[in-house]
Length: 337
Image (tube, rainbow, N blue to C red; front, side, top):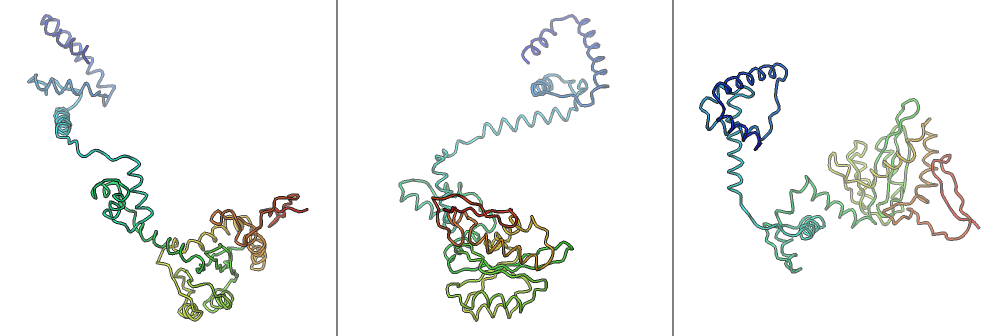
């Protein structure tokens, strides 16, 4: 840019004839250039030079070819805005340390009902001085329903030993017939307490499943379900007669029944997605082998510290033997003498 500026200054010391000839040559080349390039690429330094020339050359608008005069004026205004923004900048308060920011967000995540003032008070008890506004600045905007979800998770965790989730899944046969599977899972050990299969689900059938689950159950308090039409008023009254608290989820909120939704996903991913179901009898046979012979008694869960719903003892000695499940889709490994 400096070299170009120096060359421009030297032009003033050339003869008038030389300047006119060079000007004509440059204009001819510019006309040729315009024929081949519709929109030339202009560098920031070119913009600065054009803006400067427009301030000292009265006929710049007539001589301008590569861009419109309005464009040059716009560049000048943009430069003024940047200059004024730089001139008007404020130093503001210094940022707090990153570990303190992480601590603020951790407190908010672990205690979603706490306000900025509550977090600031807790920080003060830890010897950390920070204002309410600073805490509020780093909390960020909570996601929609984030507080509700956290409180619901806390509820599920506190009542896991006394909660059962129920739900349905649909399985299509080889001829696309719909078969319905009812599943009830214990939140405590992730054990499938009961399952049943039918091609004609109705309220009375669902009530019968409740009787098979809770006739001799004395530990369950809450039954979590969705708002499927099969859960009729009579179904709800049956839950109450068993001394249980009916806990329906909100509309379009499957996350409120997470364990039932998760086990349905597991049944699909680990079993049903790998098998073409022939009929209801075939499906019942498949689920018996997977749920009763594998899922409840052998499949390990991360949430159970790598144990199975029906706890498995650790075997440290003996020969390792694998027992195939569903034709080798899964295996149970044990030690034998």
